[in-house]
Length: 221
Image (cartoon, rainbow, N blue to C red; front, side, top):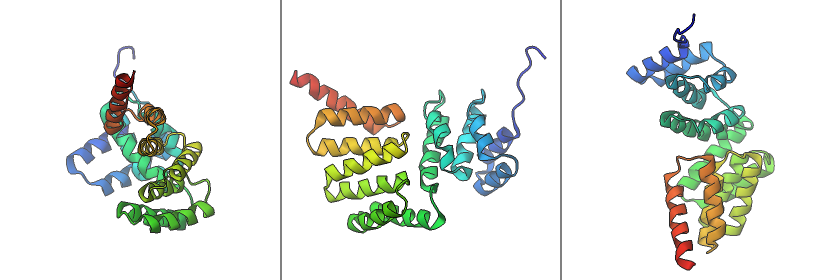
């Protein structure tokens, strides 16, 4: 009927319930009963922002690495809520490549890096890279451990490999920038930070680093 308002999918209703009760388990159960990850990826293009938010949130629970491109594109949604949820969901699906034992190993590596046990993280990440060289997050986590150990050139190599496998990996691009910054190569750092911000416009820390480097460039001229 001309001029009629498009009917919102059930997903929107389930999402509104979640906003009221914050029951994530119930949200996941109801969404998984009706929607596949592929369908949720399509909903990311729905005209209603609440539907796009719901899809981005749900993919963080139900999606796997195959959802990476759709979520990567959602980082440029006009709605900040969609962008924020897409970023969180991307970080989740990046860890869902590989077999369950490989995912468990990655989880242990992440814990070691967070705890700043960089030598242990490096050893485990090297093991995972050997087992699953196509696992982008394994390379990224090894890059983090190498950065923590002060091996900046080697960390850059791992970041490049992570980005080669996963071109949406804004974290690896930003990490590469930090390495160059610590090496005193500000022009290369600026290029990497710009790449990271192009992938994910919500990286406020990266934006601040770009502004600082650009001011430094002007002072040198």
